[in-house]
Image 1: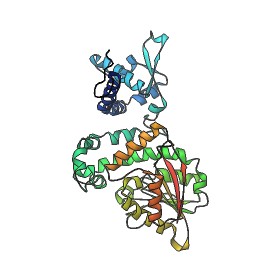
Image 2: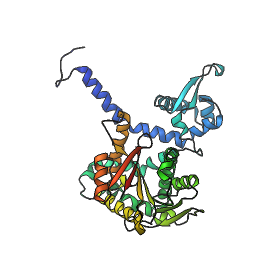
Image 3: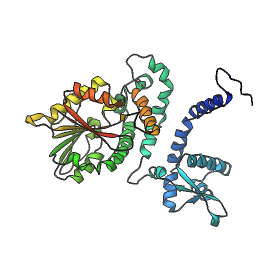
Length: 357
């Protein structure tokens, strides 16, 4: 092959660039394959089989036409290459390949303690994912969010007007909360000594229930939109209150903001934090606000973690929100009237921030 330069690059560099482009051109197929395996209930089928399942068994359970068996095999091969299944060649099954769950696909088993299938179903709903075809139009709209452009209203208004999608969104957020709960089990010091806490935007209370179980003397209020909490029942130390966090937040020793602030502009975040500050300084008390969110740190994070954080930042930009680095977080805290803060790692890509008035 000729080593002559084309536009200043050798052929090897150009072919690598082409491969990168093709990878991203067809990246939507990754999401659609993931959606397919959840829709087909394949993780549950393998889980219920109690051992790796052969292709012939799998397509029999799925009642796939014989003409599509090869296509199922190709989808499973690709999903296995991406880490969602493990392909095992079983000598007892006449060398027919079998599929086993990996850690990632175990997170898609519906009904399990840690299941992110609702997140897949919500985010990859065509109504939501289809909006991303309009990024160009959105960029030229001065004030509208991406969903304002495509759905005719802001995302939160859309949820209020569409009960079925609101239900799907709440289930997705609840599934994500279970993952955060796994991390919170090692954060006892954060909640020790507190008598009361408000979980702002706490949804159906998945996180609050875990905290209440761990600290039975802690009184916890889940505070969210009336549409979310109106028909929910509390317990001895757990209650639900509907309201608007931009107007007021119930008083407590601590306020929890879990994956809330990244949804909003800096200006809106300051308004929310100011209301939280009022809540934790009522009656002369000096409590704290606990923020669970991403902190972008390109210099220290692994490339894959940074990629997830920057990907989420683009996603939040479409809601007029953003993911922030420490400098940007500090600026928000100071402008909202807080004096000090502490950042601790929580999950692979989320941090826990304690901020003090």
